[in-house]
Length: 604
Image (cartoon, rainbow, N blue to C red; front, side, top):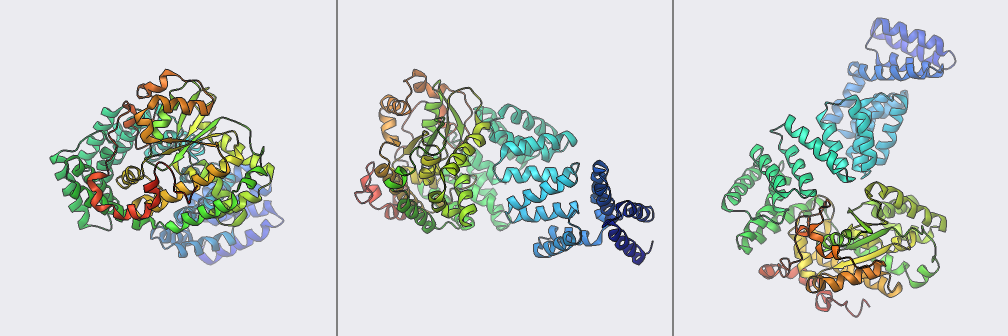
């Protein structure tokens, strides 16, 4: 069939679709006899079959249209534009196709891929869900949906979707890798470990797989095996900076001269292709900072820490003014009268215990202590409170940062709904029958008013550490994601100050709602501090809490290996060798530093 006659036949079939689906189906079949690769004819067949109530056949026709897309010049052009990252061209072509045929599942999936590339994951999710409604057997769309769930921190949904994806394509290593990662984020450590073991056996020279395997081994406390996995990965790719940082991030090993030489060589190689290997360079700088600190060379250590932080700060573009504005708005809104007017609202469940504050302030130690109690389960740093807050702001004010305004306008039933949402979303993290469980995301300090309104019976523990120890520990730490404030000394000092300011306000308007643990007091007199925490939580003292280091639970944070040791003072005053370089931090902290562990009078 000539091109013109094919196009005319397609137009005729589309016209028949309006009120003669049987005739349209016959026309589509006739076209396919002449041109078996006609994606348009397959789509018309799907339309007609669906109109005739033959849904399973319609879905098969939709999948056939997907397979035929490689012969569709317009879709090939759109795919090429996506591959070359010409996103405006790709979007224009795909929207034109969907205007012509809104059920083209291949175009829907490609538009979802485009949305995902620019971070519009909710849009991508809606598109992929629609594609799967039209073609439930469209495996590529289902796999894409699992990735979109993962990117939105919906790890349980990702894992469930990947069960179906892997059932259809059991040998696909990319699906298995994502499945292992998702399982690791919902506490499915045994299954995740088994998947990584299988993958590393299939791909023994794949450095990043061995690195992921090392991460899960570290999480479950198999430190020697974790180190061996990282070292194996380095033999596969000695220039992969994240591997060196993974070893450094164990905190319990010391690099030697050979390690430093290998890292310096890798850094030189990455500098030669600076743009392509920026992530390698920043990881190598952080690891070399640790290596030179191990060698008692603070000048070289600080030089590398500063270089790594500068790369990451440029990537993230953190603005301290945004945090300050959010804290200002939160303080202005969350008055004593604000809380009194909403007393008794929210979900009454007492189950959650929030441990919050600055990162690197001892929250993992507190969690490990409390998770050794018979009534309290440790989980991990859960993303749900920020997601609820920012989602509330986006829904009500078209700006996540305006969540406090949206919270002030929320009716009682909305507050109860949000509390129930948190409980439901975090239920997957609970692996025992213990009545209480911990969310130790440090950044939840920004959302304490939200927690107090949606979960009024939840307990809140503020983990606080000396500003210089805490902030310099952050400066030496590269976080896998988030914590954008931590890559600049002045920005970090401002962030710590804003944190102290908001928590002082909460103490004033909600006295007794938050229990504060000063890290140095916990180190000096652990039993007194542990008893005080348990009294606040309404739980009896248990000796197991003092033997927390014997608890073999999985720990995901940067302090995972440190909390497997008895309490010690190794982390105290680690900023002192670097005092000559931390002036911007001191200046930004201002009176907060002088007043510690109290707060400046103007905050009280």
